[in-house]
Length: 323
Image (cartoon, rainbow, N blue to C red; front, side, top):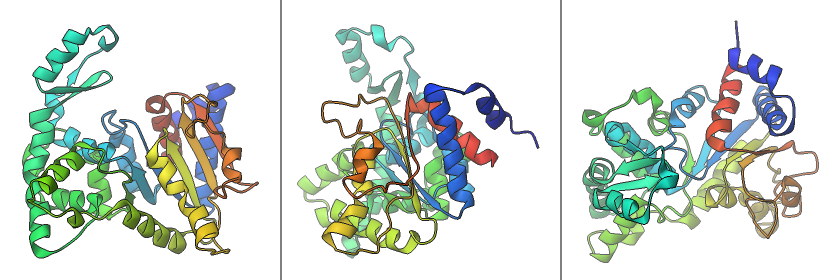
C-alpha cells in the first residue's frame, strides 16, 4: 500500500527541523508498536487551526490515549463544528490598524491571528445549551470536570442541528464517542470558563459544581498509575504553556511528593515549539532540563521540532496514521 506522506517526508525531510520531525514521527510509531501509550498536549489555538481534521482520526485509531489541552482548545473545536460558515478569515491581519481591530470587536468578531471567531454563532450558541447542563447538575448536587460537561453536550445531540462541518472532523466529538480521558488545566482561562464564573458571581450556580484543577491532577495521577506499565506513556507536546506544564509534573509529584518510588518516567518526549531556548522560558527548555526535575530519564527518546505546530503536527500525525 502506498504511503505518500511518509514516503515524501522520509525522502525530502533530511536535515535540521525537517529531520527532527521525521525522527520524532518514527519515535512515536515505534513507541506505539512496542505497546506504549501517548498523551498529546495542545496549547495555542490548534482547534481553531482545525487540527481536528486529523486529530479526530488519531483518536478513532487509538493513536492517542489521553489529551491535555487549554480550555480554549476544548471549546473552540465545538465552536468550529457549529459555526464554521460564520468564521471570517483575515489573511492580511498583519496590516490591521487599531481602528480596524476595534471594528472587528464591534462586529462581534474575536480574532485569533488570521481567523475571527463569531461571538453570537459560536460563543453564545454553546452557552445557551451548556448553561442548562451546568444548572441541571448544580440543582442535583452533581459535579463534573469541564470536559465531561462538554461530552454531555455533544452526546445529547442538541448541537446536531447546527453542524456546519463533517462531524468526523471534530476531535472533541471523536473523543466524546470514545470517552477519551482529557485534562484541562486552567480551564477558567477560557470563554466558557469566564461564562461559568459569571454565573457563580450571579449566584446561579455554585463554584463547586465544576471540578477543580487539583482534582484534575488527582484524576491524572490515577490514570497514569493505571496506564504506565510496560512500555509506558509518551508525551507529545504541541506548543507551550499550561497544557504541557501541568500534566508533565504528575510524574515528579508522584515520585518526589508522594514518595512512590516505582513510578516510571515519561517514556517518550517530543515538543513542537518556536519558543527561544533562553531567559528562563519553560516552554523553551530543552528536554535534558526535564531530567533534573524527574520528568524524563537519561534514555528517554527526546525530540524538539522548532517550527510552526500548524504545519508540523499534521505531518507527524499523518506519518503515525500511515504505520
